[in-house]
Length: 301
Image (cartoon, rainbow, N blue to C red):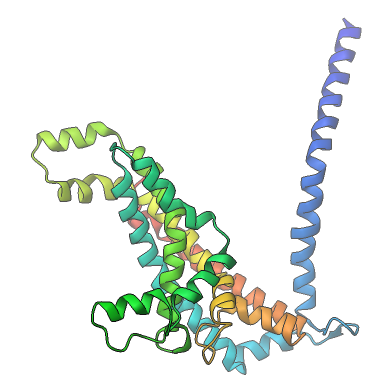
């Protein structure tokens, strides 16, 4: 009896050792690239450091500067908010509309789903370069099409402070629509079909079924998409970097882009880390407010 207990104990210890062995690489990566990076960024935000000389402790001077004296940061924050106000509602609506469109058992629907999903898995850099060509004011296909339908003076998209933001918003919505369409599609297919059959017996119109059944039962999915979209927009970097370099006149410079410029163009690592912490606090506050008030419009039953 005692020998059997000892073998079971040795077996459990061996299983625990093997489990920790398999987890070790991920744990090491988590502590090195997440925990250490977070603690180091907080430490460096209290210093002045140009990467080439030892850091100099400056206390909260970096945070005081970004809150009181940096007009460029306020412009970057305003640009990021504008992108969020454009991308989140438009992107969510487009993805939901596409999901409703392909949520039908018709011939060839799989092909349409695949075609709509491809941009979301394509390289952002490659897509950005292609769209720079498409939006070229002289030779781009977009302006060629606008001239064809009678627009005499189509916009100079990426060189205009008026049109650069809308161009990037449309570009981001187009690229991300397929990914969020798949999420909405999963939510739509989780709605019981019996509810639609009962509504049909009661004589409900398609519009009434959408407002009374689809939209309420899809509200958890909408909430998830909105939260992820807001976090994604506040971390927006690749598209402005590839398509406009933050221009013209800084009109498409986002907060992450401004962090990048401070860190790797001006070598102000401490100040860049302070801006990164400000960005974290903004995202945390916005996400907290969303979770705090979600029960006012999200239905989980």
